[in-house]
Length: 217
Image (cartoon, rainbow, N blue to C red):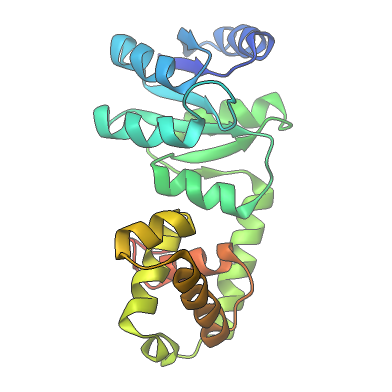
């Protein structure tokens, strides 16, 4: 039996998910929460096999912050992000926070059920569109890869790249490195020029490939 905790700020969404998942033979909803802090408390209380976590919750702790905190407190609990955002940056940030996968709220019911089963069997799960984009981007980077490009970066640029990939905002990077936000922006601009990239998700993908976060694609 897969024991599931639902964390979503919409009561109607939670009700629908509860009806859907309780109808599956080997799944049971053991708790609900309307925001991240409550979700963490309920997870510690119920110790579920999986937390189905909404990404955007305007009140209380958001899904990414809650995921990061929850993985520290219950490292063996699987977390599957439920989101309406079909965006690479949200996907990367969810994985960095400790989620095992991401499912769109618009996905068919069976896809959600399959994703839960897959994650609880120890696999990662990305919705099909994200898989295609991630693979296309990765292969594109491989095709255009210059083995010496990383060596073109200064030590400070490498530090900024790593912190960007970990999801830190420019202000947070500036505080960590004790430099100005403007200097961070300059380093980021230089990074993109040297690596021939245009977006933050491209930098994150590159950092993952280089193993700067401790794991790679």
